[in-house]
Amino acid sequence: MKHWYVVHTHANAEQKARAHLTRQGFDVYLPQYNRRISHARKVDWRPRPLFPRYLFVELDLDVDAWRAIHSTIGVQYMICRDERPAAIPEGIVDEIRSTENAAGRVSPGRRIDLNCGDVVQIT
Image 1 (cartoon, one colour):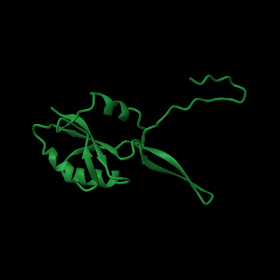
Image 2 (cartoon, one colour; image 1 turned 120 degrees about the horizontal axis):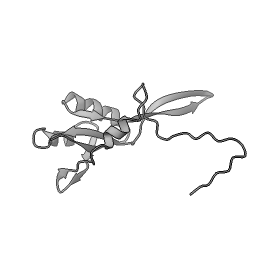
Image 3 (cartoon, helix red, strand yellow; image 1 turned 45 degrees about the vertical axis):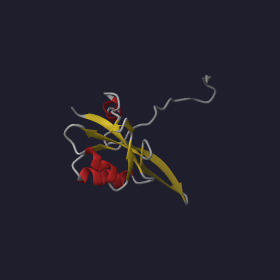
């Protein structure tokens, strides 16, 4: 049975790890959001990983050759428990995917419209 597992990548190597894992035939999900980048009076929006250094891989541990993931370029290790990858709870990846827009980017937070003089409470 297939479950989603977490892969920890090298710094700034999420795209590289995704490409190499996909080339090996694994189903990979790297959630991204658009980040505002300002430089020299120029503003740009670029995709960035929602969880830096982490991505998700869908596997059936009894069928897939999951140990090959450890030696994949860009991958540092898989999150494991007792020497086997630890599955994340059902529905987590589906819930993240449900927040994606048409461009495939996740909205990391919901914006609340506030006006000058509005009363807010911080908890």
